[in-house]
Image 1 (tube, rainbow, N blue to C red):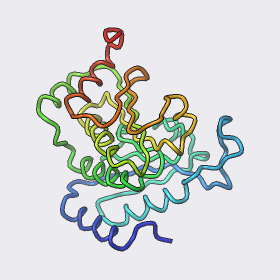
Image 2: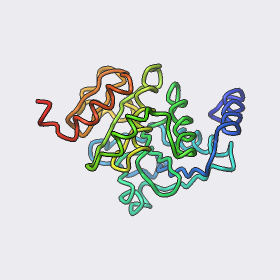
Image 3: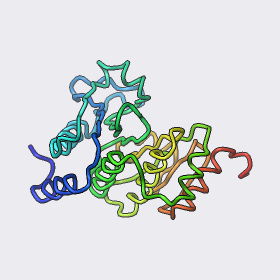
Image 4: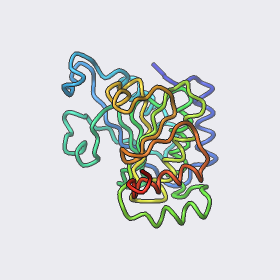
Length: 231
């Protein structure tokens, strides 16, 4: 059964035709619920939207010959899961080659469908529309930065934060940026006290509440390099 409506499918295909530049590879980690071996904190539960997410990813990838989809089984392909630092599913990595820093955990539905499509387009261009000062600052980062932006499909403001994180990751190989669908990973929502979205956690130490402008987002990312200076 198709996940996308006819209208959304046609609009996405047109968007790809107009704006998709280079070749894009999508690595998708999934698992059929009947075969899933879960970590201890999820024993007795199933991967909530693995089946739907896989179908959605496959539909989107079928809309352009410039998009290549590589599917991995989270259990059977543990070497690849370890290589790409995938610790939960469904997980999607959007890349031009083998980079692994633009990531989506959970189903990119609702408003987050737009984040998924824009990430594909940005990756295909190999560049972003960030301000020159932001790009220069990001190029100077020489320590690892992990950005986790928690979202829900019904949040209209979350896409701003998700796209900023993904664009920052495209401009710096030191940055890994994740979209995390909060309701699919309740252990993380509890860990990071997610009571409202978007909420962005940077290097486990810096918290960004809500959608903020590019300059403010950059300030928080730079603070994460030396968090002791912010105390």
